[in-house]
Structures are given as structure tokens and as C-alpha cells.
Amino acid sequence: MPNAEIIHATFERAAEACADPAPLIYTRLFELRPDFRPLFDMDTDGGVRGSMLATCFEAILGLVEGAETQRVIISAARFSHGGYGVLDAEFDLMFTAIRDVCRDLLGPGWTAEEEAAWADLLSEIAAIA
Ligand code: HEM
Image 1 (cartoon, rainbow, N blue to C red):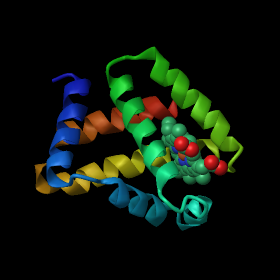
Image 2: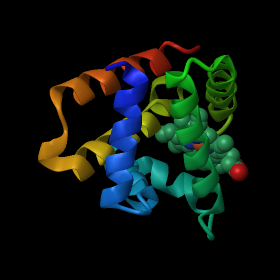
Image 3: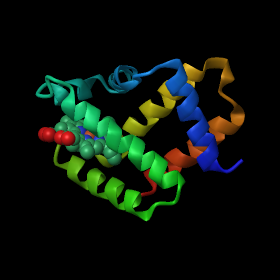
Image 4: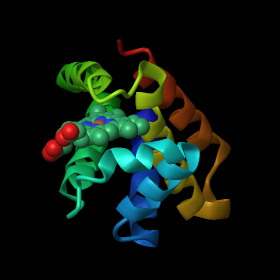
């Protein structure tokens, strides 16, 4: 099965398990890096976190479809986040958190093929300068 289908299938099953994974994803991110939590102190209504996550989902779905524009968007966001003090490799942790939450939500249903497809995707994103 191509990676795009595998990634789509994990998103669909994660969405069935949890209608709004955003709180889980940010909880996971802050578990990985507790020092990132205060960066969002100004985001009292969660609007920034919501639109940031939506951008990440669009980036993932675009990338697996081979959309060149999403590579540009990731590259630009990587650069702009340097201005918020989020360094290169740290930026990728947001995608790691998304993968971790999907994996948790799928539980024992998460397959080796899905693990491999996500690992490929995370490497592909990390390679976008
Ligand atoms: C651990 C990684 C990340 C951290 C700690 C982080 C942190 C932040 C912070 C603090 C802001 C608010 C900046 C401000 O308005 O002053 C922000 C905004 C934003 N981030 Fe991230 N970010 C991360 C990863 C990402 C990724 C991977 C993407 C997507 C490719 C992304 C997309 C955005 C977008 C689109 C906004 C603007 C949201 C809006 O104001 O509507 N971020 N990020």
C-alpha cells in the first residue's frame, strides 16, 4: 500500500477513536518538551494552537500526496519558528507528537507497516530545510 493511503488510514482510525485529538497532541508535545508550554501562554483561547495544528495536518496530507506547496510551507514555518526560539530539530517534534497520539489512539491496531510509513514521513519532513 502506498504511504499516502497508510497515513490517511491512520488519521481516519484516530479520528474515529477521538473526535478532537488537539488536546492530546499538545499534551504529548509538552510531555516531550515541558519548556514549550509557556510559549503558548498568550494563546488564551487556543486559537494559535488550533491553527498551528491545522497547518500541520494540511502539511502532512499535502506531503503524502506529493504537493510541492506544502514543502514550501513547512520550510517557511521552520524558518519563522526560529524567530520564536524554536530550533530546527525542535520544530519537528510537533509532527512526532501527532504520530505518537495517532499510535496511542490506534492501540494494538497500529501495524508495523504504519510505524514504517510514519517513520518515513517524519524523516522526509526533517529533511525539508
Ligand atoms: C514543537 C514545535 C513547535 C512549537 C514549539 C511552535 C510554537 C509556536 C508558537 C509559540 C506560535 C505563536 C507565535 C506567535 O504568534 O507569537 C506558533 C504559531 C504558529 N505555528 Fe508553530 N510551533 C511548532 C511547530 C509548528 C509546525 C510543525 C507548524 C506547521 C508546519 C507550525 C505552524 C504554525 C503556524 C501556522 C502558526 C501561526 C498560527 C496563528 O497565529 O494562526 N508550528 N507556533
